[in-house]
Length: 358
Image 1 (cartoon, rainbow, N blue to C red):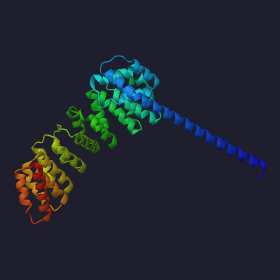
Image 2: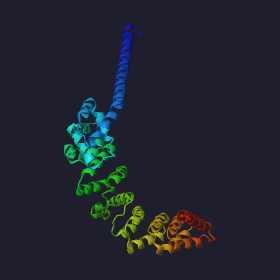
Image 3: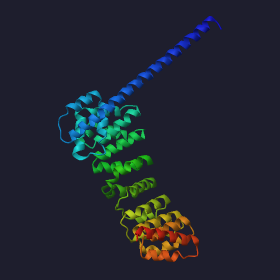
């Protein structure tokens, strides 16, 4: 190897060593910075909480809070977020007004426009908390609507949450309709946010979705209604129970106990119960048990003798929900010569007795 080549190798090794030392120095400085920030946060958070509690209690002395805000705006923002699950109404508005006065909202809006998800996510989480307050919503402008199409699912969810909390019923209806075409994850996350609007949504938006020609939208709507677990008015449920799409039939059956049922609805449930689809029949049996439809006892007894273990257990549990006729039916079936029928009936009757107590 020539002298020139050795020199080149030495230079490259030197550059590599300098680069390594530089990266080590940067990492060390960042570590020191984060440690200092952690220590400062540990020191400030109790003070922030104390001052915010006093502020919520009616104190207008913001001197200490303003001083802390100058030291660490991020810690004050975190302190505000700690109250998101414990305050509402006027107290929440008071916190939001403080965030406006200290220009924290503007900080979050700026971070929400960042290309870095690590900055956008907490920014939208904070905006979701404060945007129920109309002045905060006005400052955010169209930032939230634009974020509905964000590629980051977490950012998208927080934008949905903010709009749900601050929207009118007309806006909530539009959001509900848009939610039906979102991913399953987004719909699951939005279920709790939209639950309190279940009744007004059922007046128009839900009916529109359930009568859609798009089977996926119908299915998504039913899944959300079932997840709400609230009594909701859904006319002509029988049409969904008789729907050609099996997935829709099963979801409609799961919804049935939450809906005021008429004769046609109950007839549709019985048709599924006596049909060839054992899984759907088991769901129909559970629905009949929850609504305690005694006229369906004969059909449930037939399912208990079907030879299908899952369907037999579901039918037995449904019959057990209808004393005293149901219990008498189970006593008779527990003496059956078929071990599957007898076992399912005896187990369901025993659980019913223990549940009823002495």
